[in-house]
Length: 69
Length: 474
Image 1 (cartoon, chains in turn purple, blue):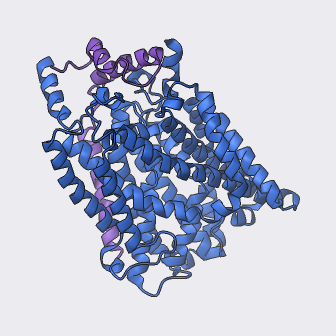
Image 2 (cartoon, rainbow over the protein chains, first blue to last red):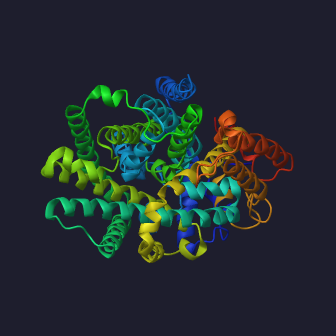
Image 3 (tube, one colour):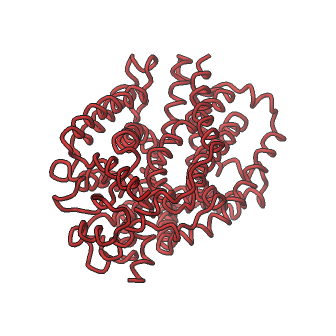
């Protein structure tokens, strides 16, 4: 069973398999475990930002179509 | 261990939340620093030759918004979420060996970009020197200046993202102020209605073809940020600063500069800023503006240099080496090929146009793979496992089917519209080149991805495992 952020589990999955030297590999294992936990901690996009980005994309498409008329 | 932790910004390892250094302001500055360079002026000049000023506004904005958003969603989101650069993330979609092969091609392109940006610095310096002293540099002196620019880029990259952050804080506001003053000077010394109603300078006979070419050029310009946005995305603290940084710094700001350049092409007959900035702004102000253009080229080149060196860290020969060694190794081909800077500068448009041909379908494959097949989750354990036990091993280390689809999509683009000559097939006025190329990539990779999923190859199952693990924690 996958346990996110479980460093021992990450170590057993990665140790000796990354191609890095031992010390760098230890750092990598730590970082992979931390990142597994942190990936959901970043502030999600608010509705306003989602709408803003959607409008940017739609504006691009509308302008591209409008250029032909 | 601490030393390796400090080296994380200079490696292919994930960058942690506490190490991210760009908020919204710095992200916009960093993207603008990467986005604005002499190429914006050259693109503006090209726009003036095939479209009216009004159409230049519409097509520039449309193409850059579409292209940049595509790249932001395909690359930046992943790089921000996992703290990995663009090239490391390709390992997910193409496998570790596949990534190395694909990167080897980009390495060649990136050497070209760094030299072109160095050459742009040298040419701006030449104009500055001509204006101030009356002496024009010899071709050898321009090559020497290109080498000096490359050495400065190397030093900035060696110092890392913190040095780039400081440089952007100086360069970006200065350049924006200069651009605004130049725009005001251009409009005040020329008739606004003449610029507004300006017609294309050397268009193709068919109006529709001109519009399509302008859109292809600008979508290509937006998509051409593909190699660099990952290195920027991993440095961002929030998702909104990542995405808006891309949209403002890479889509809006370069468009503003390209349009100013197009306006100058209609009004004074030249889009080359080194030719019109001093006559327009006077010696003092024009020289200052050129100085900021030189800085802009240096920051853009430094980002291209930085991204490439991060990519090199994925190779075993560089993975365990110090950053200074990696950057010096990349500097070697840059120095050697700098002696051909004139040839490279004159063919810069080739690199830009081929970017659309390659990075358009590449972005589609990445988006489909990440959002649909992986449900927005990447298995980092498999990504960094280079042995046969990795879930992203595919077939012998490479997603050869995916790479083949990318190659066919790129060839399809080139057959419809040759990026080198702009010669086009009869179907081009009906379909454009980017749409069929991306559509093929979408359909082909969807079918191929389904096949991989069925065979449990490529680590697609991780999305489900992740959701279950997350549910178990909650």
